[in-house]
Structure formats: structure tokens, C-alpha cells
Length: 215
Ligand code: GTB
Image (cartoon, rainbow, N blue to C red):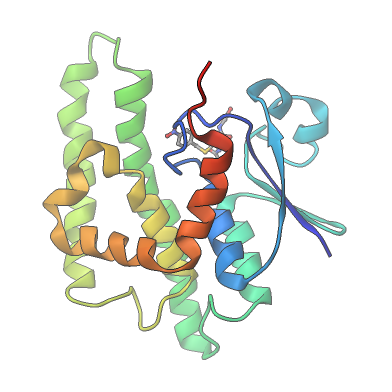
């Protein structure tokens, strides 16, 4: 059955791979699944046809036959459940990997998103400069905790899994801030994720759409 995902017709990041379709593309590449892409403008994302797939009018979505999903965590979990290589088969290891997927999305990603909010959406507010160090401190705290947990390990829990795919995708969002570089073990962890053969395929696919084009 054909898999179709949605993505920005022109990502605001200009092809840096930071929009959330990249993590879904990466999971599909890891699973060896071909997919089609439907590109949407910001306006089309808010129209009824897309809102039927995604109640919050966002990308990415995932369609496969009768199934339509939104939320990258749910999409990647679905891919990982139905194809080998992204979740361990042993029950407890599988539960731990799922725990780490939730941790990436619910405990690590929110503080990183706050940083982007201050930098991009609140920069002209009179209180922005005062708020920034507080938000940076929260990010540093999380990175410190994650780095302590990871130690010298290659991946979060044994072999590479969907948990690492999601965590690396979340951490990549920090790259423009330079904060990752102050945590060498996390920077190396992210680099290991990017070095997997599936990642550059996913990156190249979004780059083909989003690379800045001459006007
Ligand atoms: N929790 C949802 C999920 O994980 O699927 C969040 C989905 C989401 O935030 N999608 C964003 C979106 O559709 C695109 S990825 N936004 C449009 C809207 O809400 O109207 C977020 C994103 C956007 C831009 C950059 N960038 O420029 O660097 C990075 C990430």
C-alpha cells in the first residue's frame, strides 16, 4: 500500500531538515519503505481537506490505505511497530525504547521549542532579553541530565531504535543555537545518528524540496 506523508511546500528553515517531516522520512528510510510526499502551503494546511487529516492544521501527516495519522511520535511508533529494525523484539527492551520516545517528545523537545519560540517569535517583545537566559538554563539542565544518562553509550538503550531516531531529531533542532557543542557526548550522539545511511537519504529528500532557489 502506498504511504503518503505531507510536508511544507517551502520549509521556513530553508532546507536545514528541522521541520518534522524529516524525522518521519528518516523512519521510513530506516524501515526501507518507499513513500510519496504531498507538499502543502501554510494556507492549504488550514483548509478543510487537510484539517480532516490533521485537526491542528500542521505537517506531517501519514496516510496508508484507510489509515490516516498525525503527530510524529505516533507516526514513527506505527512505522516501528510494523517493520523490523526500529524497536527491539524483547518486551522489556521494547517498553524502554517506547519510554525514551515519549521522553524525547514530552521532556526534552518542549524546552528546546521554548528556545526557538523566544528566538523567533518573541524577539521583539520588551521582556525577551530577560526571558532568554531562563529558557537557556532549562535547556542546559535537560542536556546535562541526558548527557549524564547517556555517558559513553552509543545509543540510549542498547541497539539503535526509534527512540534514538526521535531523540536525535529533537536535539538537531538545537544546532543553530550552538548549545549542543557544549555537550560533546550529545554532539557525538547526534553525529552518530546523522551518520546512519538512512539519515542522509531523508535529509536529501527534504533538501530537494526546500533548498533555497534563485528568485
Ligand atoms: N507535535 C506535532 C508533531 O510532532 O507532529 C508538531 C507538528 C508541528 O509543529 N508541525 C509544524 C507545523 O505544521 C511544522 S514542524 N507548523 C505550522 C503551523 O502550526 O501552522 C515545526 C518547525 C517549523 C519550522 C522550523 N524551522 O524553520 O526551523 C522547524 C520546525
